[in-house]
Image (cartoon, rainbow, N blue to C red; front, side, top):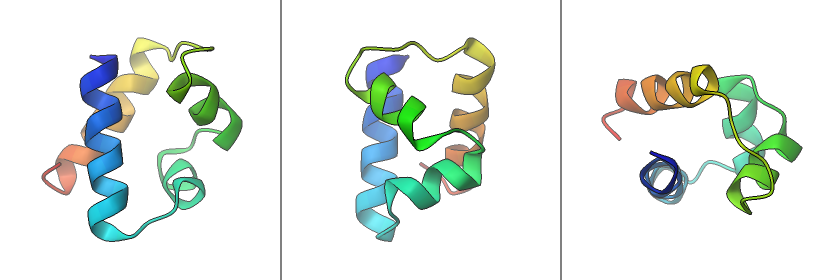
Length: 61
């Protein structure tokens, strides 16, 4: 799920022109957590991954 979720987020940010910081605020995670996860130095809980996935799905991503 991680790579797919990372790709979905990348497309979401690129297509809508949203910053990663703004995205993190919208899904209620810290920017540092997001960056660490993106660099594979931290894992997100399944609950957090689902929260992000559900948010992206609301916008058809």
